[in-house]
Length: 228
Picture 1 (cartoon, one colour):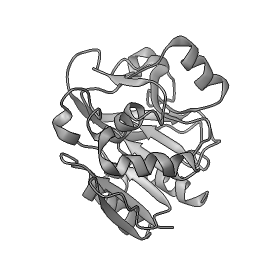
Picture 2 (cartoon, rainbow, N blue to C red; picture 1 turned 90 degrees about the vertical axis):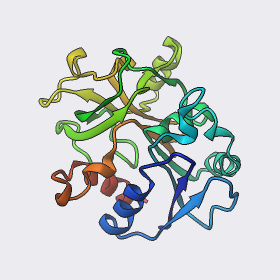
Picture 3 (cartoon, helix red, strand yellow; picture 1 turned 30 degrees about the horizontal axis):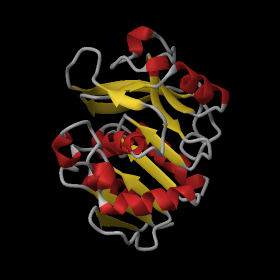
């Protein structure tokens, strides 16, 4: 399984993801520059976190027009796997590969801390090996992480079992107090209806090794690899 991590101007989690894939998952991985259109034979594409194009306009709004995104959209529509984390999730919604949008946090502040999330489904690569009863402690770092979608879209996400993760407390309770940014339905991540495009705001690559003091993120990445 060959992974490709896209690098946009302003990406700052690309090296973290490359390290996690190469050193933790022990999988071949390459960086893909945003101006290129060649995916270099990668089987799985990752859009990492950061501040693509300085987050001007809306987060991800300019990156969506980078040359490589045209090829990634074609790749995804053919069933190729694409995973967007934080800014990558924002780019996926801007590109139309995932429904909804990521808006300013309700407190209007940048939030950087550990939060708890729990799988809302086990029917995806990212969650198939995770226990729905065991919350995961994963860091967040964003100013625009509040997931929003129209009511009918939210209903479709629920009906189609497309919600990947929800913010919860350490006991696994999905409650308002555990929601760090005001996301509707406490949503921390979703997938598309075909279940090959994934987006999430928390950063599993920042909790992927014991030297980081947390391996909960590695569980998400190992679940992904086990199903491919």
